[in-house]
Length: 336
Ligand code: UDP
Ligand code: MG
Image 1 (cartoon, rainbow, N blue to C red):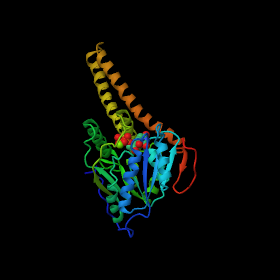
Image 2: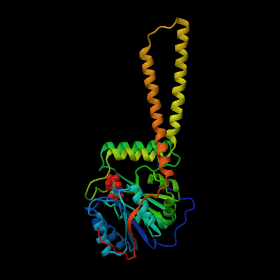
Image 3: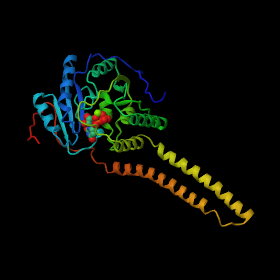
Image 4: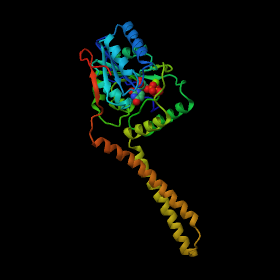
């Protein structure tokens, strides 16, 4: 099956170390005041049990609540905390990138702040790392907390994407994953603005393994996704990851042009053979509307790509940060 990325074990060689010398936990957070403290506690507990040296890289993605203040409190109590405070809400994909940019570990685990990604799975991810895998990603065993509509649209989206894309994206893989330093450096080298992290992670390659996990219900607070955001996310995913819609437009154009040509011949033939009879307005109207519709769709597709090219050529930095308080650097500022 194409949609399940094979556990790639070519050139696999177990690592000499039992665990990374330093593990970075990268956590993007947008209005997570209800969950962030519980998140920190749960992660710290697992790290203690595993005797794993770690740092937490919090990225405050323009939260409007007390998330940043709580992060500062956590940092005051735990010096192994980095806070990247983005200048506004940039969206999760960019927040994750900002976190990875500032991760100092030999490996990093990207996880959501809402405890939907169970921290105990990190244990299995580290085992995978020890076996020599550079990317160990979590695969949701069950998405039963989500509505039927969301689950089936997500499945449809990844099926479609994988049937046209060049690099398969694993079904049900979230952003919960461990990356070796090699993979972190590769991912942070890709500076495109329209980033679709799952596509980026799949594109960089490396030895990859999956570990199944059960998604927990959100610890507290609300999901930041609604159908409109998900729709935009899918368009982003498609256009950032594949040129297939452009090709489809071309073929659609060709097919419609051939059909119109054939129909044109029939109309002309009829007029020559049987004389020009005036009726036929409905056919004409239908044809014009149909062709107009097809043209608009195709133009829209081209526009989507053009807009992205426009954004990329501006060559802006991916994000700005109000402040980056990196682990071990004592640089205090007035708390917002
Ligand atoms: N998030 C973010 N920026 C955003 C939206 C979400 O950093 O603009 C973070 C959010 O705080 C959480 C993670 O991304 O840590 C996943 O978000 P959420 O739980 O809302 O998504 P879901 O689990 O429903 O897919
Ligand atoms: Mg969530």
